[in-house]
Image 1 (tube, rainbow, N blue to C red):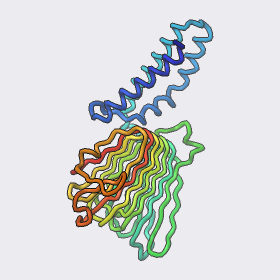
Image 2 (image 1 turned 90 degrees about the horizontal axis):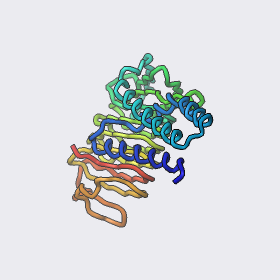
Image 3 (image 1 turned 90 degrees about the vertical axis):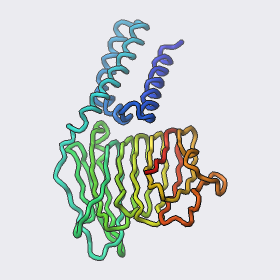
Image 4 (image 1 turned 180 degrees about the vertical axis):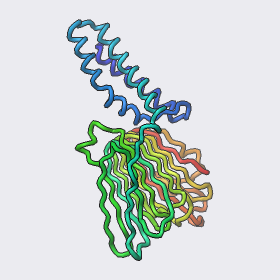
Length: 295
């Protein structure tokens, strides 16, 4: 058996176990943290390669790579435990709201970052943006009719080897919102219980996303495209669901939601058309976990 196959197999087993335990809530660990670890500890790869070049010992080579994997995972747990201490947030950036605005549009375009979206009540501002000193963000704002858009992105040229970026965005809960998130290896927490969400589009590479929805809008359209992610939607118990899901290998609890098939690959909840609040959800995932929790 080739040594590189052994190493690759160990990596897959380790990642699979961590991901499984995290999805089962047995282990409180964000896979996104592993990327933090790799970026911090990548010089160790040079050390391992250098030792292997000098000694040219297959057993030593395999042992060193296994030790490297263990160090990366252990360091990841250390980052996970101390993450709250490392934010160092800058001052808030307020996006002023134009007159006559009834709808807000939030566009987020990120590489590797952690972000939170919450709501707040304001008479004068559209959004409030906070970030740590590792996040080189750009933002633009514009208006069209009764709608105002704010775009937040990070400078990828300064962020390729720095994925400890943290971003907080508070949006005005008096408005109806369309939200568009385009991110790579990221971790997001969206608390939208007090937000009138008309539409949300998620285009995710790999990472973790947790979204809390409320019941303030009649129909919310949720479109998700993802590579390898863990996504959880928390939806009010009385809301209607319409779900269309496509994917390769996914872990999901959709079969436990008591939905009925209305057409091919489309499931809906009973009395969907009679509900005051509905969620029309379309999911296209490569490999990952997708769950809907009722509260």
